Image (tube, rainbow, N blue to C red; front, side):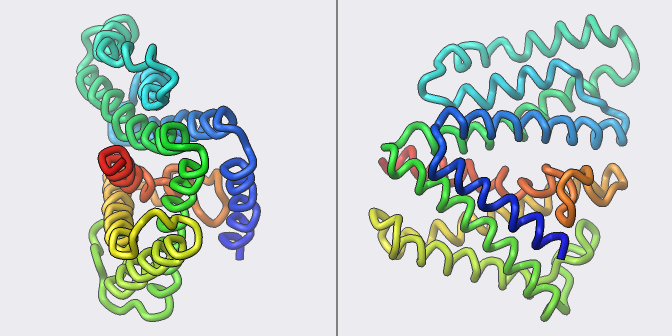
Length: 264
C-alpha cells in the first residue's frame, strides 16, 4: 500500500512538470535528481571502501547539463573533468591507500548518473516542443509500466528466479510480464499520442527500452549486493531510495536518446 501511495503522489507531480511546466523547471528537476542520486551512490560506494570525492557533485552537474543544447559551455567543460577530479584528489586525500578507489568511484558516478540523466534533458529540450514532451512521457511510461507489471506479475506468478545472486525476488515470469507491459504501453502511446512512430518501431523501442531497463535494474542490484545493502536509502516509502527508483531509467534513457537523435 505504501508503494502505491508514493506513486499516487509522485506520478501526478511528475506529469504536471513534464506537460505543464517549462523546460527550465524540468531541467532543474532532473539536475536535482542527479545530485540526490549521487549522494546515495556516494554512500553506497563508501560501504565498499571507495567513497567518491565531493567534487563529484560538480562533475555530475556539468555532465548532466552538457546535454542541454543551449548550454554549450558545459560541453566545453567536460574535457577538463578528469583534471578537476585529479586536483581534488590531491588536495583532499593525498597519497593514501584508497585514493585510486575514490577517484575511480567519482568518475564512475559522474558517468553512471550524468550521461543518462543528461540524455533525458536532451529529449526534453532538443526535439520540437510538442514531440519533446511526448518523448519524455513515452520513455517514463514504458519504463514505469514495465517495472509495475514485472513487480505484480512476479509476485503473482513468479516461480523461476531470474538472477538469484543479484536480486532474489526477480523472476523470469516477472521479466516476461514487464517486457509485455512495456511493449503494450509503447503501442498504446504510438496509436494515441506518439503518432509519428510506426507500430513496428514503437514495438521495437518498447522492447529495447524494457530490456535496457531490466539490465539497469540488475546492475544497480549488483552495486547494492557488493555494498551489502537492500536499498540505497529510505527517501521514497515503499520504493527505497531515489537510485532504486531510477535504476532502469539510467540504462533506458541513452537508448532512446540515440534513437531519437539519429532517426531525426
